[in-house]
Every structure is written in C-alpha cells, then in structure tokens.
Image (tube, rainbow, N blue to C red; front, side, top):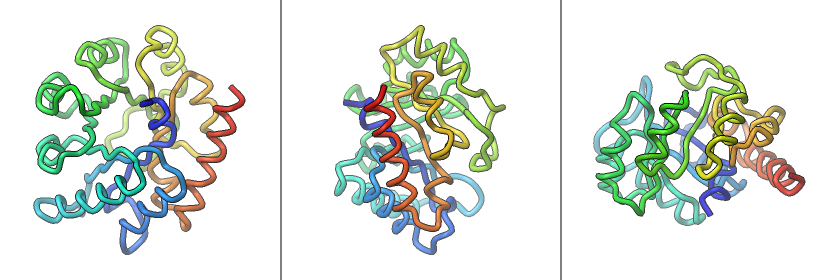
Amino acid sequence: MIEKQLQLYFIMGSVNTRASNPLDVLESALRGGVTCFQLREKGPGALVGDEKRAFAEACQTLCHHHNVPFIVNDDVDLAIAINADGVHVGQDDEMAAAVRERIGKDKILGVSVHNESEMLAAIEVGANYVGMGPVYATASKADAKPVSGTAFIQKMSSLYPTIPIVGIGGITVANFEPVLEAGASGVSIISAIASAIYPYTAARRFKIAISKEVFSS
C-alpha cells in the first residue's frame, strides 16, 4: 500500500511556488494525480506560528479530500497537534527513533538517508520509507548534499528490498525513469510541479508517465 502512495510524492512549502495562493497549486497537483504530499515549510519567508499551522491544516484538508497522505517535514510538534498522517525527518532534524516514539507506530515515518549506516538506522527505528538524493542537481534546497545519482538507490534497494525508497532532487518527467529502474518505489517532486505554470498539467504528465513505467516493469 505504502509503495503505491509513494509513486508521485509532491513536496512544497508556501515559498516554493510562484502562485499568489500556494493552496491553489496543491489542489491542482492533487487533481493531477500526486499520491502523497509533504509540507516542507522552510527557508526565507516561510510561515511560522499560527500562520504555519493554519496553512498546514488547509493543506491537510485538501489532501484528505483527495485521499492522499499528508506528511509534515521536521516539525513533529505540528504533526502531532494536527494529527498529520506522518512525519519526514532528515539527519539534521530530531532523531528518527525519538520521532517514532512520539508519533506512534501507526503513523508514517520517512527518513532521509545518504549512506548505508543511516539506511540501517532508519530500518531499525521502523521507518516506513527512506528518501535518497539529490539524484540530480537541484536548486530547491539550499542545504542539499552533493549529487548522488541512482547508484546508491540501486545498491540499497538490492540489499534492503523490504523498505521503500523515494528518489529526490532535480527530478523531471524527462529523467525520472532511471530512478524507478534503480529500484525506487517513487519520486519526490518539488519545483517541477510547484514552479510549473500549470501545476495540474505537470502533475498529470508525471502520473501518466509513471503509470506507464510501473506497468511496463
């Protein structure tokens, strides 16, 4: 079940889109076929406090209307407060083991990993999936690690086939196929949808292309 939800994983914060109302972008992306959404409200100009919570709740309502999991990046307190479907943490965020204990075993836990020891640690704490990247060069994250390509995805998916992997970083409709061929269950998209002139069309193109790739594999 989780593998299917991870196929087209959209990540966005209010600062990632050129639109005047980022909720319009999210709704368009959901209608276009994204299968999971992560609120990543970080960077210059990001919402905080009550404004952040209100935006999160609005995003959550849209996601649930479309039966799509709503994941919160890093902010465990917010995720718990609004009963989000899950939390995603990086290696510089709260320890994954502590997050799992706080959110309980029934919530989704995603962890960003960059080497095998981090992969093993994520499995040990009961992560539901891991994120790997940046696969390609990306401008969406100022703190992005060096480009990793698909070799690490291929190695980890071969060694640890029971935990789903999501590739992230610079992924477009033109270059996503090697990520899935390497063994990832899905791809995470930020700018290719959030910054698109027509987010619905961008999401729809991904959805159709991924469906063809999954069907043919």
